[in-house]
Length: 138
Image (cartoon, rainbow, N blue to C red; front, side, top):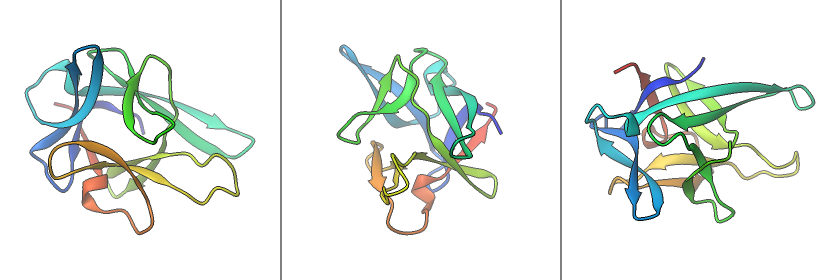
């Protein structure tokens, strides 16, 4: 499955994943849908044979930058591709940082917070609705 459209949060369908330029930086946040390209996303898929892992890079149509994370596990936009593990639950998707190694037990999942910010949560329990996104062609 590829992504080509808007990512709508399952828990709060009034929010879509979007970007916002904050001076020099571009932030990722939940936004009310306004039909602009800063809220539209595409994806590229690759299969890593050595680990039998399927990964996707997620690109913003407006900025051309990629949905990414930094060493502090903060959600950022980057001009470099970052590869996400996508977890499909019904018709919805969750975005997770792939594990660094087989010994690495931590899983970080993209999550919409109540204030509209987007964070990476250390996944200790089953996925919740604020971590799931519907792909819609709007």
